[in-house]
Length: 305
Image (cartoon, rainbow, N blue to C red; front, side):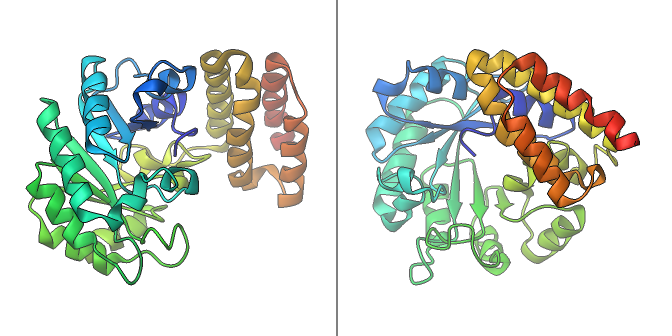
């Protein structure tokens, strides 16, 4: 979710009742610490605690040193990403690519736990591939090396986001360790979460892609937020866009487009899929921040009509 779950997005999800939000994944490479992209991705949101920073890296020293920098910068929890299947991450021997090397996973977690006085959690998958479905072994390693909790995406690295989520494997991982385990993958409804909890016994769930265009979803699944009206959803879109424009400055005009696309794709009440695609294309041609907000404000009377 790097490039998506930025500070404005996390603030909205938190406002709607998400109980735990994590900063965008950042590289452990020291030379990237002072870049504008890294600065924005690790930026904390006032009023949200704990501040959780997610790190991706391929060697124990760089990840541990990165954890120290984030701890000194105010992080309350360090999360190590062993779950991302993106090619650009895996090419750098990070993310879910590391699941192939259990000894390296142990070295990275252990070094990080020893480096900082705050909890260290990990994000994993059910394994490297269908042939090397070693999620249980990885979870036991994480616990043995001092990790405080584990989030499991219910697919292997090779599966990426294709195929059914493996609730059975997630359940075996939960049974294998004593530390909290959170399930992730295709979690998009209260009913689905109830079935997942019954099938796996996990301690909680982590929501990713299903919250795109729906920052109220985590709160709804948590039972904090009820039904959100169309008018409220459209108001949230405008708030989100305005906050991103402020957060990113000039670049905000471009950054907001993907989020508006996700919102409009889910707002069936605005009209047919073809009409909503037309709206998305119209919005994407706007290069002025004020005009973007005016366009979104005009969607309300269109809805009433």
